Length: 155
Image 1 (tube, rainbow, N blue to C red):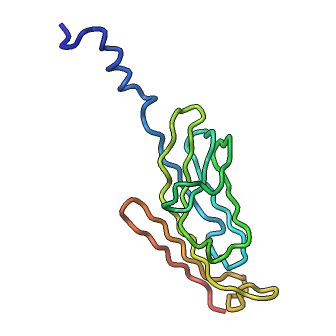
Image 2 (image 1 turned 30 degrees about the vertical axis):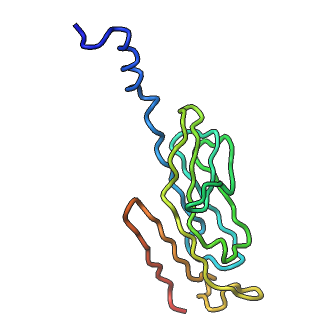
Image 3 (image 1 turned 45 degrees about the horizontal axis):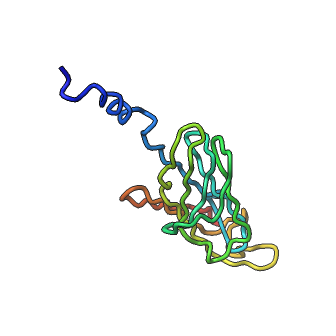
């Protein structure tokens, strides 16, 4: 004999069904990843593990999204044109499942640090001949902070 009345059994099974599993978090990356100066264009790519009804881009710790893409299969691209110092913040993305119900948690934040303001043809007059200028990309993963170091060739 079951310890519960038989009419409760379907409800218990329903609570354990896979459709109630939270959606995996997306991942966010910055492109280009080497050399961003004031006035440059940057693309943020949000990779989703499942097709999404929508993908939203947020500035870190703000509840309101700043951009949205609809009907995304694998990746949503968000372009930021003419980067200003005010754009040098942390970003996150989030998606709502298309076939899988629910909304994901936000991605780990990615920080865009912009340096330099050139003039004329060269936006980064101090840069090496390739036109690269300094960039710092910081990715915060859970409780760990990872800061890559960029090495530029000597002119």
